Length: 202
Ligand SMILES: [Zn+2]
Image (cartoon, rainbow, N blue to C red; front, side):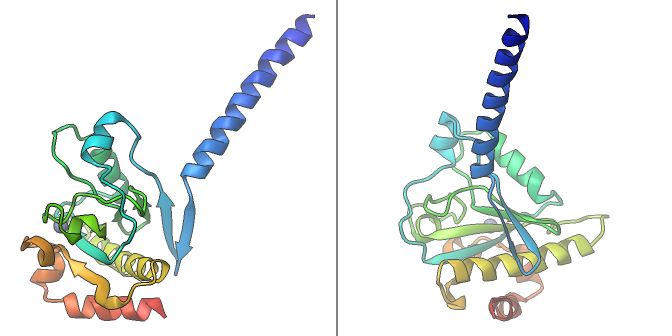
């Protein structure tokens, strides 16, 4: 009887672990594109995030909007920061990408609040991509170069996946005039950025 009781407890524990494992597996899809790891780690589903970060249904994606984070944080840190923000500001985006990986933060069919154009198409019909490490003061400058290269791969992957042409790429600046993506703008590389994405789509 004692052994039966122990096995019963262990069995129940194993079942709970198995169920939790399946759940986290289905939420954490991992894809690779040209060597870039694209990992799903959506924002927590809680009432605050639903109100300020998960937008409305976005049945048709028309654009991919490129940003720079203007700090030195990794994609993982950006995702964690966004997840715990409680400043009553509507702010969110779909992907953060750094020199190591791309993290998907919002689903494809929900809009984020990243373009500064209210209910315009920047927010309501585009996927927001934050390229990290764009201000690496005193740090390894290659971190940004490598993050941007992964941003090129991610943009190419997204355009292919969503069946969009390179002309669907937008800068944050296009929607609201903000100086973003600041590195690409300051270094006058938007046209070459698009060329690199075109190449990475082939
Ligand atoms: Zn931006």
